[in-house]
Length: 445
Ligand SMILES: Cc1ncc(COP(=O)(O)O)c(C=O)c1O
Image (cartoon, rainbow, N blue to C red; front, side, top):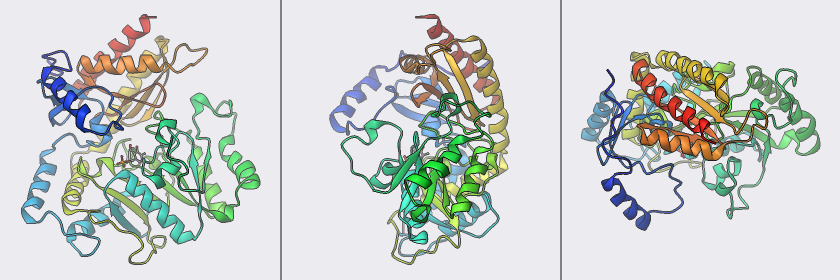
């Protein structure tokens, strides 16, 4: 008999409300909160709010808690590190934790070639480093990015981000030299074609239009992509897409920068999502789940590409010992507890159940994903496929009020990304609630 979720007071309760007022007075209004969940504590797949409500976490703290909240081995690794030393900048000195983590990352990232790693503090910083490295190594200035992409919000990363206009508004001009091309979003093909008859025209388009009419491949340093666009709506390219993109990159000598900030560290049932397409990128960026909630970004590159000189890039806290100790423990726990296998198993079940609901529910347009990175795109009706944005927000909020903390992404997609440790029983309890809410909202007009 499941004991979760447990709603003891309709959220947001009185304690949460008292914090919301203070938050509004003292925090930057630029944060875009999904709903007023004020967290008190969390353990594995359960999050408890300040009023004592307990939710099944279908958001995993913004896809960061892949091994579950407060995994005892991670907490113990952090505590042990605390007892030894908290900081001694890797930018100017040495300590073993960064070295050990870099070695482990070289093992788990695709490709058996030699690799080197740069450490920063976030996903955005991992992208910034990748972009600067690609420019340094190639001595070229231009980048190819994708419409719908999210790579972060600092000026360099934001120049490649093309997810929501609000993120760029009033900040232009950004870093020059980024050319955005359509992403293979087959459910809403930007070229209004159908897969597989299209033969991935979106790849040929880059060669036949962008490279022939707009930018010279000789000036292009790299293609920056997410294997699965997360913020953009859990958008999944078809099987031949990345092998085709890799052939194009090889033909024109372009580097492939793979942003695995959200899809990496086991989220999709493989260490890195690009492995589903069998492609080995030149540079991989990861962050979020890497240190299980502590700030850490890693830019892992082929050793011959990471050839910049001392002084060309660094950051005081990048690769701090607490985060590195946590990340080493994360990688060990994923291996020891067979978490990749669980992500695949539970993810297949999640996809199957929601796809079955999609067959009979007018509100569900598309169900897609890999492992425990699954999106349910909601539409007004199957003919117009108009994004049902308001209904998606409504389902998200009602699910939360009933004890499942999930969020939306893209225009109208429900994002299902629980910790990868979730078991079948907890997953099914959460799914009952979410399916119930979807059905309820679809019956209301
Ligand atoms: C794919 C991707 N890249 C980069 C980022 C930026 O990471 P951070 O928020 O850690 O700076 C995110 C954050 O959501 C992301 O999803």
